[in-house]
Image (cartoon, rainbow, N blue to C red; front, side, top):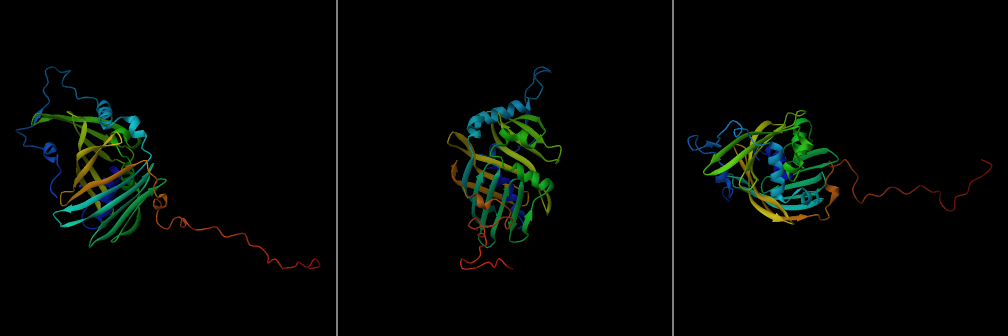
Length: 291
C-alpha cells in the first residue's frame, strides 16, 4: 500500500535505514546491460511518438479493477511483515485507514515501535530516535501522496503533470515509464509499467526527511485480488545502502477502524474523556435575598 511504502521509509530512516529473498517479480523489472535493452521498434516518425501518459494511467487503473471499485474503498485494515534485508532485523506492521486519515505502526525487535499518521492534512511520525515530528514541506507532500492506495487512479490529486518519458523492450517484454510531477512541491514519482498486463512494477521517488533527501526505488510484486481490486502484496524499497521488504499478510477493506489513532499524539483529548458537568449549588444551599 502506498501509505506503508512512504511512511514506513520516513519512520525507519531515523533508525539508520529503512519491501526472505528478492521480490518474486524483481528480475522482470531490473535493468539489463545496455547491449540487451532495445528501444521500442519504430517504422515511421508517427510511430516514434511515446504513448500518452494519461491513457497509460487509465489502463493501469482498469487492470487494478477499475475506478468504480477503487472508489468503493472507504477504509481498510492491514497487517504485514517488515524486514530490513541483510541486517537480520524483522518485525511487524499494522495500518488503519479511513479516507485520507490513517495510522501506521511498525514494531522491530531491539529497535522499538515507530508510528506515523495523519488527520485532516496534519501528518506526523514518532520514533525512538527523533521522537514526535510533524511533517512539513516536501516531506509532508510526499507522505500525503502515500495516502493513495492506487497512485495511477489518484495522480491528479497530487501532481500537475504526467509525461511518458521512456518505452523500452527487455527480454521480450515492453515497459513504459510515466513521470508524475508536482510543480508546487517539486516532487516527482516515476512509474514503470509492464505494457503486457498494465501493472506498475517499480516506482522511483525521492524520500525527504530531517536527514535529507534519499533516492528510493520500490519494486512491487505478488499481485493479488481483494474484493475485486488488485494489490501488490510484496514491496521491496531499495535505498541503495539498505533495502526494506514488506509483505502483506492480512488486508480487510471497508471495515470499522479506530479513528482515535489518526491525530498527532497529544493534540486531542482521550476518546473516553468526558466534559465536566455544569457546576450546581448544593441542594441545601440558601440564597439570602437581602444580600
